[in-house]
Length: 125
Image 1 (cartoon, one colour):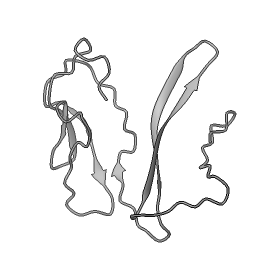
Image 2 (cartoon, helix red, strand yellow):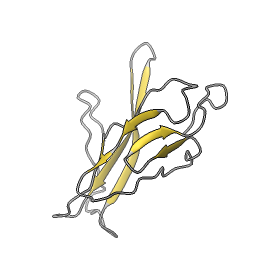
Image 3 (cartoon, helix red, strand yellow):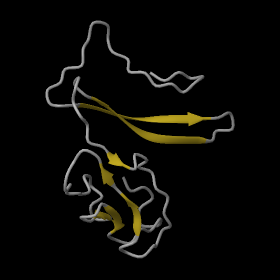
């Protein structure tokens, strides 16, 4: 639940309901949007991870997963570099349907793998 005045985000459970941990974590994924009186809008994907008590989470940094790039940038262009906490020798990969456009190398560098063209695909997700 999002407080419309402050933007505070709170997890809302059905009364007497608990989060059941079938594995080491439970992921909640959703979008948060903001609009103004003139119709301007912005959206951001949000992931909330609920962990069992005492569990040490590994995190990928940066946490901001929105990066603005120019279309037609050269193949192999660096977008960002990811770092992982609480993990030795991580193996990175793109986990989505976009592995034809992006790749992550062994150092955590997110790179373009194909030409990004606004006219080819309006939204790549």
